[in-house]
Image 1: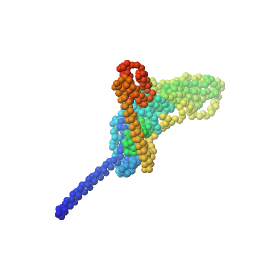
Image 2: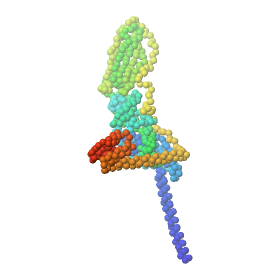
Image 3: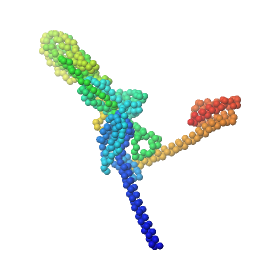
Image 4: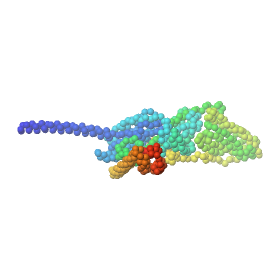
Length: 580
């Protein structure tokens, strides 16, 4: 017995050691797997709100980093314009303790259509560099479809202007939803001069069957050189109110799993969005060679010329005022006084030119007036020769020359030495035009929109909160959700009771057709109609049929008459329609 017991204890000891080794190996494998899972679970995540957009729209990118702050390199994103929208910090309590998640938000604007990729983004933390997973985005061509909430439309009055010809660039913003914190950039042109014309024009427009509020801005573009002019699309950046339940941004925040709570309370959030105008093409044509013997004034447009003196006769030594007025549409503000060959014996003094130039939806128009003081020094007849101004007419594509009539001036009296004319301010006088001297702030939907900042627009970081505030929010959210569940359960119970009552009324109405006598059939149909009153108030068809059944019960009708069955069947149809 002693030997057998010793052998048994030895075998039991070996068996226990084997189980212990196996348990240690299993725990080691589980620990390694858990560590790998935790490492993978803590990897940075890149999330977008949608995977298909159109040219001119934007998407919202969030990079979620668990455990702390990070440095994210977005320079690897080459197919999108990247605008930083700030960061936010979220704290949640889990099985492993308090976990901190920092979310970096970006707005991405596609540069072209096609299958574009957001590559793996390097995320540098204290633990090293990790990478997000790449994301493929489908960018469709811009079609201005009716399902767009917001879009921009850019047009030009002439895609192939002459150098120096005025071109109107029109930008229209279509708003199907309200926005806030809007910033609208201004168009940028290479090899051209750009001036914003009249202020913002607001209206409403129906586009593809949908009504939009529109804001229209106009800019006058003057090509400076021949060739293709690069036009940079205009970008509108804003915040748009988006229902939270429509956001396709999974996260780890508190309440992420409370989908019913979100539907019940209809939570919404301000989502940063960006929209880009459609590209426009602009190619400037070089002016043709100037005809031989002609001096080109540099004016491009359509003009008229008027030359006159205030008098046709004067005494020697008196001053005569001569005016040269150039009017029309084009770069009239750039006009200069042409060379004039003055007759001998006449002194000429220039006055300051006067400019009265306005702008409208077609560009510059107005007039420029040059005044000269003529002082004849001897008697006789002076002939002021014609004034010539050559300009280019872009409509016909040819040079035109304006020519005034010669002016004859008769001077009487004796020869005198011309007295000096008081010094005249030669600076150009500008008459106040309809266009304000200072540009008004561009506004859109009553929200000031400033010219787009150069470089990324960075918003201030969102406020993070500590464990105490987190606990208060968690308890309050839990209490609201429990209240929501109780309300929904009570509403469901009431709905079931109403459905059961409706089914009983319908069964009573159907049994009326199976009654043995006409009187029982009418009585059962009447009771069914009286019972269904609780589900339908102010139903004229129901009230008329109840009155009809009461009348039939108290007037003589032959037994088995078809009118009784027809009235009962009609009562059944009314009951089924109300209880449906």
